[in-house]
Image (tube, rainbow, N blue to C red; front, top):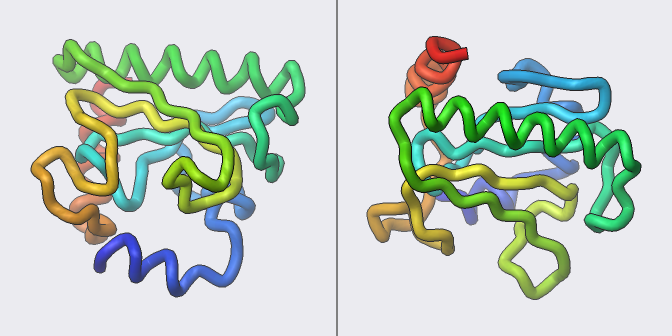
Length: 141
């Protein structure tokens, strides 16, 4: 499924349910998960549990927890052998941000945009792709 079609079918914020069973790591106020429509297969997201849309709206605790999870994501990428990473946090209506719930992207070896790292339209991963990515990430935790 293409990401644009996934977005058309959303009836609620996909992050407000706390990511349900998609946590790779979590703290009291935030969690690390994989992107359903990744720029790269190991594209990770850091999401506060509380719905917040602006960076300056985060509490001090949320900032600390998200910073901790960012460091953990970068350690995961180093263990997976990546040398280049991007951390992206977008705010505002004109930033190509598709989900208003604040979240940080942590992405290895990729240029950021509407296309995946191969220049194709981004698509939502299949269940088997999700399983493979989660298994690979857990193997280095």
